[in-house]
Length: 289
Image (cartoon, rainbow, N blue to C red; front, top):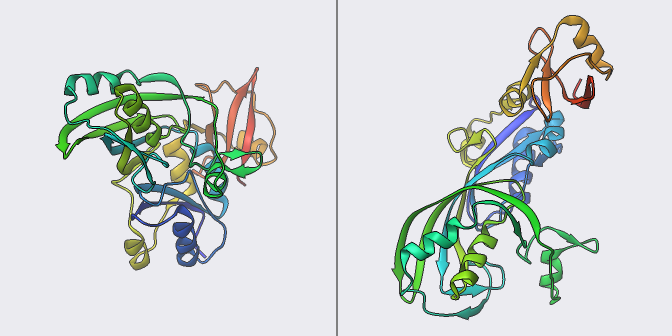
């Protein structure tokens, strides 16, 4: 079995996130593998997996910023807000003014309330929303606060009666890019859905460090847990006495340099725990040793 760490996969189209986890379990020789946020089967790109103790980092990683490249098709609405769903309506969009399209997309930047797509993994009454939709139920999800840090339009081109728009998005965890396509289509009065989605980054892990499953099968490697923690969270290096306290989960009389979890390390560089400031002490969020 390999050492604990993160595996950054460049997911191929057509695979579920569970498919990727199953393959990495075989490659790593352990069942203790999890992922930090799913990718739809249609989507490609960065999927971060944790192996062994590093699976405990995933819940914290899921809160980090994500980045995507996507293509929005204006003029057609679908049941899933992407190309895998059934068409629910169509209206000519080839006449749309590119400046207006860009303005409507730009209006979504910032802190907004977004209604997730109905075909999502959000639980409604203990059952996944996508399962309820699959069973023929009508699902209405409540709007949730998300943050779109930036949304850049790269290209607009007419495809028949539709208009395809290529965009790059940086956003908070929990943002649905499919919902952006749906909502800009509604705002423009023509409907919209996503035809392509590629996640280019999860926190500090981007496509430059991602590897396909085929590459991993030839040479399985991961980001060691210490390196992953240092790249993801503000690092704090401790002395021997402080490290001993952390090993048994004690608070530290320490002023952390910022808000949120910090990765704390023993003098030799061993990753020990995530700590955050609570009052006058730094207190454990999760201890890994």
